[in-house]
Length: 102
Image 1: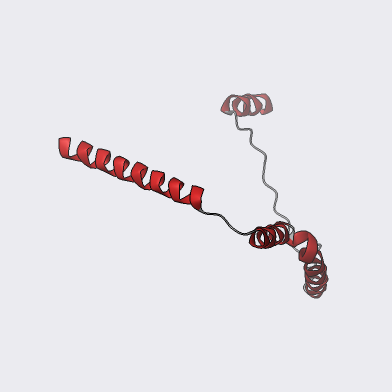
Image 2 (image 1 turned 60 degrees about the vertical axis):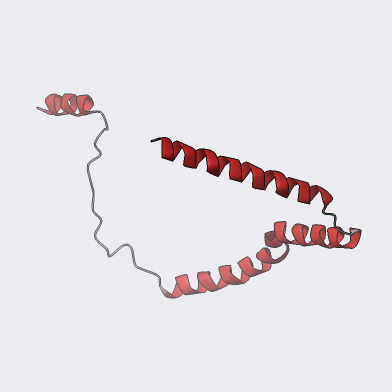
């Protein structure tokens, strides 16, 4: 059991050490202004992708789906309908209903 605890302590120490070194490196890292601007433009395009490109795609897909649905119409009136009795989720209520019916 002590060996397992030591492994956990070593793993935690190593992880914290790596995170501290990564934080030191990130503080010294800087990007030039044009790269930051291009990154912002890219993020705005990605976040608004559906608003910019999705509506035209949705309209063309919607008309294609509607056309395929029209060709695959199923006549509901000729199909047999199945009816199932509704059962309450409370067994006490079902027992009372059965007793009242008798």
